[in-house]
Amino acid sequence: MRTNEIRKTTIFLERNFYKILLIFVLTFIIACFMIANRDGNSINKNSKFTIATTVSEWHHKNNSGVGIDYEYIVNNKIYKKTRNVDAKKGDRYLIIFDSINPRRSCLIFFHKIDPAEKIEIKTSGWNENEVPIKVDISKVKKYVKEIVG
Image 1 (cartoon, rainbow, N blue to C red):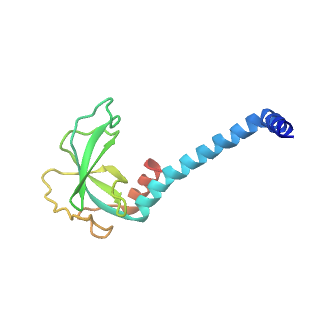
Image 2: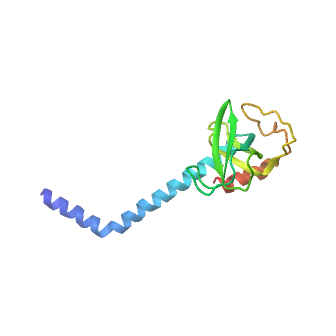
């Protein structure tokens, strides 16, 4: 009896192997897409702003990835990320981050901060209406959706 059940299961798997494999692959792709979109949606939903400083020149490869490394501080904690943009060490940019999980962020390369501009950074970040420079919030959120997902 047991051998018959194993044989039926084996035949079923042999006949449907590609269908089962396709279902697993599609499920994996959909899960990856949903996880990627979660970051962008979360950043836009719980958005706050601060200033990031580039701490490296553009690099080809290392453990962080390709591009420039930048740092920003939220609630006295330093966060480090890499972004594939053309910038110089010491450049400052506006970033948008998720206030619930500040590791989720997006450097807004089209909002470079002039080095002569002295801006006092709020430790918890600025809300949309508190940002001390002129920012088109809808343009930033659209950009986050395109870049982060």
